[in-house]
Length: 242
Image (cartoon, rainbow, N blue to C red):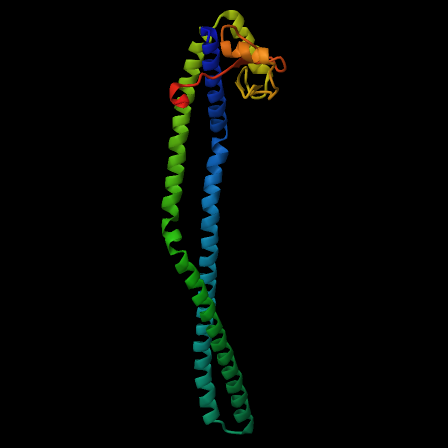
């Protein structure tokens, strides 16, 4: 394969990698936010359960206070009943006792229901105990790994940019201009396309047999008759043949 074509292939591979890295870097903020959002959703669902538990406990504590207060009033009403001086005082005390007893009974029933709800919530929290205890650590690890990988991508981008400039400088001026023109006009940035199964891998058009022969020979720079990209056939290694 002619030296210029080797340089063009190398340049194309470098540019393709640079495009990949550029996309990674440009979308880094959004992808990091997605990681945080994923863990926030887990945290939110856990907080929702914990809030339900706290609300149940608060209601139960309120009913317990209500029972304690009503029992105090009930003792007073029973004393009033015991010391009633007339029918009116007796009936008033009885009505008060009846109302307080009903209130205590309703509160006790509510507490039983809340205890059942509390058991269900505590069971749910117990089932997610490992998730709860490890959530912050897993979030920190995921973000740290992301940041480390991103830093590596940024360094690779800088290295590849330097390498690209050096590789481009070695091209003859005419080939450099052709490469730039082809790369800039294509969405995928491909100026050099591999021939696979007799077709241009960029536009997927089958090549004429004579063109395929010339591309395999590698003595001249051949272009796709459909998309004008520079064509090459990847050399088969001895290991692949074996």
